[in-house]
Length: 532
Image (tube, rainbow, N blue to C red; front, side):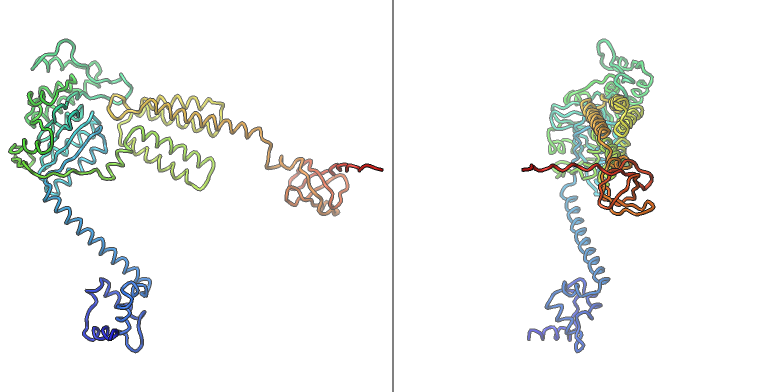
């Protein structure tokens, strides 16, 4: 009766499509589980007794590969469907997106913000809140974020939080560019004077106006004093016009914005609210959403009224791309990567091995160069840095008693100091790191020179010099120079002015081509026993 069920199913013409997604493929491989008497009975009974995995194992190799590919596609489709459902439910339940930026503004933070803002627009979010706490950052990354805000179809609220946070330098520009500017209590903003990349003191920004600080137009006029450096004046005037345009676009205090650039002034949250620099002061996200409810903002498509009171919000966690860029775009880490890359390749070329040092060195070197491409650098400093690394590597390979090594250390430290600007927050290289890397390189130079001196004092162990003085045993003594001896584990043709016999011990005195000149070794006198 147990075996009658498959026969009855087969007679009714039941399809296996509802039992297993690979039913059509199993039909093509029925010959692997058949009986000549009854094909359908054998196939169906095999399927029901052993399951689809047994049938899959009996398929030809090409069918098995197609089966596994089909299964993987079905699983991916199922997972994608579940992900789409979860994303849709998140979009419905949390119409407000919260982004946190608590570091210097650089390529990683700009990339994370732009990507998250683009996803929020595609998902139809109502509002994007940028929680900001930054000491400043790079001009290029700041302008990339501002351009994304100005072109966004979703209102962006920049909120300086938590208490004790600041929106200094580049953060002030982003705050002015946002549709709504907000701050938490006990926070500050300002000090937006641009600085240059280079040695400290060279190309410094504008100095604050001397004398007592005035208010109103007098304060702005006092801050308009032209800096002595022409390049610094160009940077300051450009930045002042840029933030003044943002203030006029959002209807905020343009006079104070220009003072923040020219005089590097700052404000607290309450002072900023009183001087019409920001729109609201809120301690947390629910209070922020409640206070901006009903406010009208201007988007590229026109003005809209915010309805944000009581809305749910969700925080966007940085993905692996942002975390990787944050690590790589750190100037100190980029410098370490370059050092590892150079020394890895140097070690691989000087003593070829399994290629581990070469592979690691190449990867680290390219990652370091990629990081330098992301960061604003001084090319003179980069040139000195590379010259220093090259000199130290040359000292290791060809010891010159410290001349190249000391010069390389000096060039490396000088290039590292010039490479980034210490005045730019978050983008300087600590002097301790430079000294540590230079000291490590100096230790490698000393160690390499010491090993070279030790190798020079060692006796020669290979080549022609090795054979001189070696002992051997005559294997056969023939006429016309056909005399062979066993020397250092090898069979050599030998010649001598003295007669030689098989088994005699000889000593090598010179080598001519592949023939050794030998002389009979003096016999060691045997100790005589005591006589009675």
